[in-house]
Amino acid sequence: MKNKVIAMFLLVIMLAETSCKKWLDEKPINTVTEDQAWKNGTDAEGAVAAAFAIFRRALSGLTKEDTPATTRNGSWGDYYFWGDARSGDWITPNNDGDWGAGFQNHLIQRTELEPLTNWRLFYRTIEQCNLVLEKIPAITDNLTNERKAQLLADARFLRAMAHFYAARIWGDVPVNLKARNVEPLGRKPLAEVMKMVVDEVNIALPNLLWDNKGTIKQSRSRGTKGAALALKAHALMWLKDYQGASDAIKEIINSNNFTLVPVNQFRDLFDNGESKEVIFEMYYDNTNGEYADYYGHIMTYYLTNPYTSRDNLSLAVAKSKILEIYPDYARDKSDKRVPEFFQSIDFSVSSSELRPIFADPLQNGERNIMFAKFRKVKDRSYSLMQAPVPVFRYADVVLLKAEADARLGRVPDALDNLNKIRSRAGIPLFTRDDAPTVIEAVLAERRRELIGEFQRSYDLVRLGRLHEFNSYITAQGEKDGAGFFPVSEEAFTNNPNMEQTYYWQFNQ
Image (cartoon, rainbow, N blue to C red; front, side):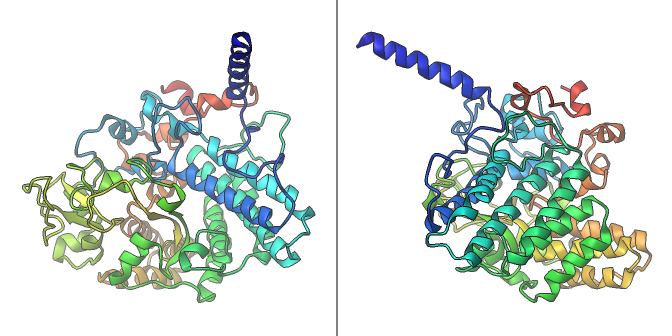
């Protein structure tokens, strides 16, 4: 018996070592896989839902459940670090070394940041979508042709979304359109990836609905025509196809399915994800085992007592930076977004008591203003976080269209959409009509409107302008790929076709 136990133990070790050497061909966790059921409509629905569940985990970040190599006990909310942290707008009030290293683009030196370089869960999402696209066409039991077409379109949209998201983070990335890969995949140029994303969306669009069944929250967390068109527009902006991007967003606007909600409805938008302004979001639900501990939503690092039991702030925007970003608020406090997005807490009150919130959102001085765009009820717990993570919302695409139109020389159209956002915020309309100035105004408005929504760094990298706002990155460094994240060593295992981003070959 003892010899059998030892033999089994050695077998487990051998299998573990073998599995650690695999790359894109790993089977997804918590998915319907090839050796499981693909027999009826219930299996098909579950397989597509599983793909979106893996994508939610990809955004929140790797944990020990995903790869033993990480030192993390829980996810951190990596979507923030990819999309916002290096924009130059953020500080770490409690001087957290990991956060500081992230701001400074020191992405390889610290072990805790290594999961940010790992695209494993994005490719698990893609693999699950590939299985769906291969297996579901043969299912006939309890699955209508119409619903089958919708599920296949949903999977195709998500496959495109996962490639798009990965390309914004790493630049050149592998394109995987097969359920089983027998050869290691190399990286494709970013432009080629974005073209594939557009092609995938065009195939999916005819079978996607504007609204799926269920609540707004449920509908906006899956593929819809609006989400697919927003994805297409963003991908086309990376390709500098401004006419195509403008046309895609025009379809969203003309559908009348979305609207800019008043500022006094921002809590439904950012706290609950229940808003007509939402186009596509990932909603994290603790009842499904998501965000059931200290880690997992970036808001745990934004907030302090009275929202959570934390005594200090790990991530914030300095007061001087807030006044720089929101000049109208600095001048006459007219920008209604500032008190919605920021709050000052009375830190003189003991952490054992419920700390009051000051009427002046910027009262706390330079380093202790709480970023409160995403907040929850004041119950001082962070063990049961439930929250939406916006991917695309209506204000985002309205401003994206304004940028595209300005670049096409259609300045009146650009001003119309730019001023819709400024009017809602309560700040003066923009009246300059020279295209370069309007483009800068639109980019500044995107910075104000979308702060903390994981868009700013992507905008800057898309334009090659990250070095203008992050003093730790040079113009030459950005040309060499410093705006993209390095690729994890895991991707190089048994893969001779993999190559590290040029900048990160020399900057460790």
